Image 1 (tube, rainbow, N blue to C red):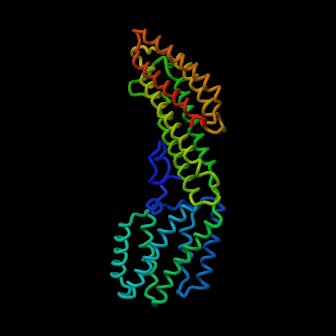
Image 2 (tube, rainbow, N blue to C red):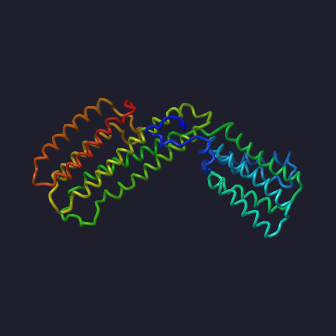
Image 3 (cartoon, rainbow, N blue to C red):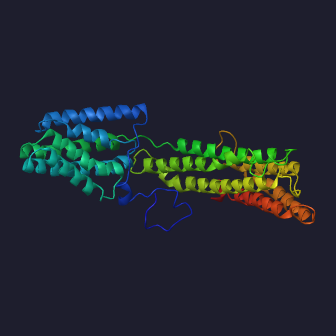
Length: 380
């Protein structure tokens, strides 16, 4: 759990805020699973039945509508949406009921009422859905027309009934948080990073006819999509954090959030360096200019060693990201460091080649090596 009074950490920006300001900006997360659709249907039906039994409003309408809007996939999201919907709908219903009873219903009173609701709503620091709840409630009440004072009060009470039923439906038996969704997104990101680096080794320095000045290697396009994979993993982490907040079925997931965020942070750092390798290789190879100090086959062999270290540290296929084999990783790290230092020394003596680009490329590969050295969970 992250709180505003905690010191900023390396993963502070990856985890969502969980304070009052954030809860008022919660947005509906959609219907989601088939089980959640059943939960919503049962809660709305219960809300409607309760309203029919106890409400003295002409239409038992606002209770089931409120329940329909507030039931979300997690307790935290439900709480945030409920606060917005109950306050917004309640205030809108109450204000519109008094307004329509005082001025009656005509085109000009309808216009003024809706305009006033929109102007008030835009001032609230809520999500767009929460802001719109006030004018939506106003439109409902104005469309139903004037009622008695008792009916107006019951319209507001129906909103409370609907909100309470929605909260009970989620908090009594919440959905279990799904860390597997984040782990899957993290594995997809890891695999994309490794594939992109492998493609640099396979494709660099292999074009006999060279590339046009404005042409790009094929490995450039997938490298640009690495950011998308990182964003998907971050969104999954946010959903996991929010899904475990106030959730009695969360188990030890809240205590593991920072460790999961740290793995994402470290993998993102490696992804950034891989994109740097892509940019350097795209500029250096197959351009028909001065020869590169490191030939295409030499680069491929070096990248193969980096990828082998990645597989040992980051895992393969369905393995968790970062489980790692400590002894094997340390040995490969030492061998790779020696290889990079030897290459850098040899390349420095090659005055007939473009040394600067090659040394920069070696530096980025060495940076990936050092990031892999601190990635495993035993270093966390």
